[in-house]
Length: 404
Image (cartoon, rainbow, N blue to C red; front, side, top):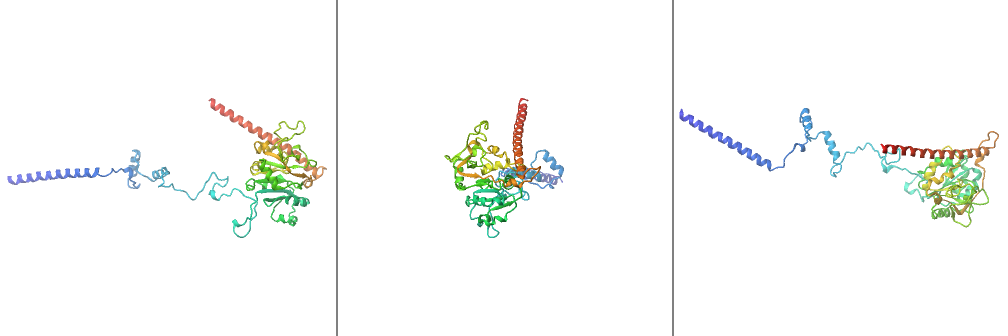
């Protein structure tokens, strides 16, 4: 019995030593394995949200854990915008481009056609084959059938480098078909309207953006001494943004500024009657042309179009405001003397009025012209006054804010 007990105790002692040795070996081996690999962090592991209970996730997030939830994954993706190896998801169902023209923000920029022209197109073939030439200049005339012969003579002074537009105030269009050039002209017919009414509605700057110069002419001009191509050359040579041909001195002359000078190519300044010019650089002594036969550069017209009032259809007073559209006006507005015209003063448009209060139709039209001039001047003066007043208010507000 005693021998059995000693052997049993001896075996137990040996077994304990084996367990201790095995445990020590296991711990040592585990330690060696652990230091031989990069440390693993739970921050690098993406666990599904249902892997841990919600209360455990909340606890981990409160402790600053970086476990990737769907929300944190989106934030992480956005922060990687500078990483060329990743891409931010794009919602292809929506487009919004603030730099596009107003109203076209939802279009891809490559499909925005912001400008147009009066070029004629065919109904067949390929679009890029339509145009044999693209005229660089635009000439418009406001016409009635009674001046058909005069307009025919005018149009023939303009080369194929001009698009011709006729605004018909008497509604008679088909009678012009006898002229070959009329078949390629643009005809716009609205009864009893004026040149500036048409210009405001059909010559928007984005419509005429393809043309370097825009001629906005009356129908009663004699052009025996005029050539449109030569005129454009003079305008370019002298840097004129707004101009008109000189007027024959002995007929239809209102202002000294528009009187033709036989010894000059172009003039930009003149002397008027005493007291008419408060400043030699201001109208009517400079920076001035009349509204019967003006010519505008593309850039100048973009401004002038905005000055034209919708309801002041005769345009009286507009010629005194043209200077606001170019700078310096006394250098960029002038009269071309080498290409000159005759103002024939046909009262055709005046006869489109109505007799009222015992007055002839033309008298009513003339009265309206004079009233519009006064109204235009008043609007311009009030607009300037309101503008400068707003600047004073803003300046006062800013000054107060600074003082505080």
